[in-house]
Length: 85
Length: 272
Ligand SMILES: [Zn+2]
Image (tube, rainbow over all chains, first blue to last red; front, top):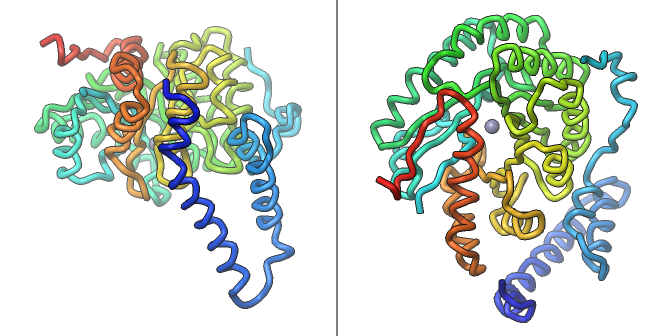
């Protein structure tokens, strides 16, 4: 396995480019006509960016959860789906 | 390196793709039955599709030295139509003895609805009754986590089902552990935007280990790349992973999983 320094060396320019892409996409939305400030997806994106900025582990997992619908453990009762055995 | 693509929809791909796959080292593929991009009008449409999967595609693949295997079902999207689904379910048994059929799939959920759940359970019962393996599609994007948990709940309703004969596909960072912890196999799909990239798939391998984990291209009629598995091989090599680990992921694991089906047989090309 490679060291963290080796991974950073390999991926630094790619990460820099991804940050620029993200910034430019948000600028593009801002520049365009109209407003999406109330759009729920903008809130999700802002929260995702906050997760990336955190020092906590499992950022990818947290972002996946952020963009996921909730799971209701009682779903079978709500669907009237019999438990089979 | 020789590899198996355990999930690819070759009915939607050109013969040139077969040739490219062969040049890249693909020696076998498995093709689950899926949504054609439009809703079929009748069970007869599915019968024709099953003939294509069991007779036509094996011949196309054989021309390029690729073994072709398949899975049969009505996909989760069209399973919303319960009557059509039951008509299709009733014609599956006559195809189960075709020499390239590995089991029932890709069944699953699409929008996580009651109808989809009912038909999912009827497929599982059909598979158990006919002693078939199962390949499962988990939903896309925001529906994936919820749908995967629902699928695991439903599978747990069947004590006669052996988890080692079930593969839950399209896992990502937030679903892989629950699938593996329950004893099932897990598949990662390498899609450009909506699923895993090769880099993230390798991250998952590094995080959870290689046991019971496969990767596939799920190449189909939409944005997808049939040579995505070689992309993963390349990414693992760039990171300095052992060749034996790469071979486990792209050849030995799918071979081990498929070998539980009586119709699967493939020699290791390196042992020829
Ligand atoms: Zn598929």
